[in-house]
Length: 97
Image (cartoon, rainbow, N blue to C red; front, side, top):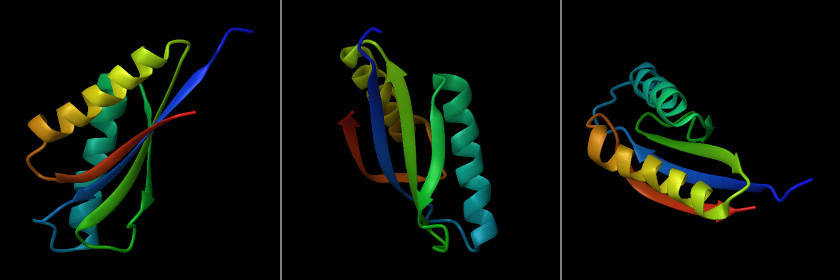
């Protein structure tokens, strides 16, 4: 079997306009769906479920090429910073497994 690289991107997002958990969930579900469709990656909310204006997401991709996985996750970060106006990327971390 060839070498497999799993890229993990953890995201800390703020949703400053959210007035309720329902508002936040709507934004986060939209972000998750767009990321899945645009980048063919797995996304899950893993932290901040009870917070009205913060969310922690985990984004995962698998590849045989570490540079490809790193580049793909960097594209996710760039997309969030440039495209999403309803949430703010507070912090992120990329880990290759």
